Length: 232
Length: 232
DNA sequence: CGGAAGGTTTTGATCAGTCTAACTTTCTGA
DNA sequence: TCAGAAAGTTAGACTGATCAAAACCTTCCG
Image 1: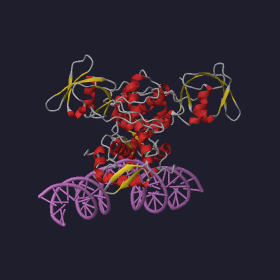
Image 2 (image 1 turned 30 degrees about the vertical axis):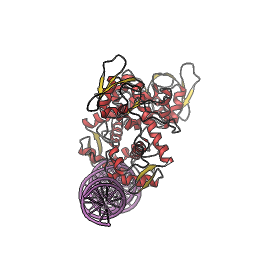
Image 3 (image 1 turned 120 degrees about the horizontal axis):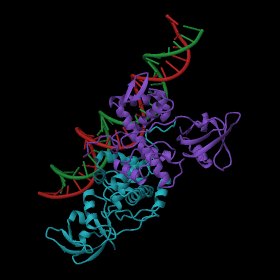
């Protein structure tokens, strides 16, 4: 009897899951280190693993809901409304990630996919309960800031380990949420948010030799080093 | 590039969420106290809040996947495969309910809807972590048995408080997952799994007067009493 | 035993999300 | 400057899940 015609459960956020994924992708592409004003169709498609036409269609729908400012052939950017919605999803994602690591003992490399699904079905009530259970945290396991309930998010640095000079001592701020295998590896090497790292040398080919505390040195490649952001 | 064509994230259980809901509904209708062999289209439709044609269509698909034995015009019953799948979903549902109550402090009346959404996105890994965090429980907050990972489920009694004789002392086994308002009320009255209750008298009109420990007596109506099952 | 009643299935439509193929716009470099 | 490449959009089709309306079985009763 409910006049809901969609076949899917009502989303807590009021927006359909796929649409929330697009919001997140556009947010990442426009506020990230790559700092473009607008996210291109192709970039969004790549981010989400869908084809360009799918993106085109979705952007039209999002524009009609005033979530994005979409200029054909030029790309899309979030409206204030869209940005707020994106940050709500990101907040849920990061709270869930932290919860899974801290309260359920999952590894930081396995929580991303789980959170990707859970973020769409967490009610406001549950979100608040998780937040409280974690003591109102402001960082997720990768060091990413958790937006507060009003969607405020502190500015972050975009200096990466890749750009660190040999001899420097740096503090890890956060590690991008990426390939689980690499994350697991970084975790084992002690490259986690908060860790203080000495850049021993740059190897030929670009790899970086690091030392953390009294551990034996580790060497990481460009791909990984570019995903590791530093304080300051 | 993934050849997944459905548009939705792959379900942990391998079955689509809506389909899982049908499995649960058929399970409830065929193993419940109402004990029919087959669940009718209409009953399933009522259970899920959809129309009969939707059920018909879904039953055809489920039959083609050998999850149900569907005889047109006569209704559907679960195959062994379908029953296993149903119990997996029920297991996740009940584990989540208990988790939300015990670890996150939600009330037993508010966890059903939440679990209804979460049960479809819990991976095996997360299910196991929740199970472990709860100490491998065998009852959810309403007293319903939690199937084990292999889908075994103990037989349960179907004697209800409605059928209890005046003067009898009975132990509450479980309380059906129903209207949140009523659940909250029962919880406040102390009518929860494990509680020992004295049936003081039957009022005219059918209501039942109860006494629990040293609380002041409470009176509950037929509707509620039929949802409260007793030990033995 | 022949209908009416009521449950069931079929038919045709919609919406969300996706795809491929074909077409259009924009950019870029010779 | 303009032609080809790259990026973007439109068109058409598909799956999943649903609904309303119409057609269809079953059953049971007079």
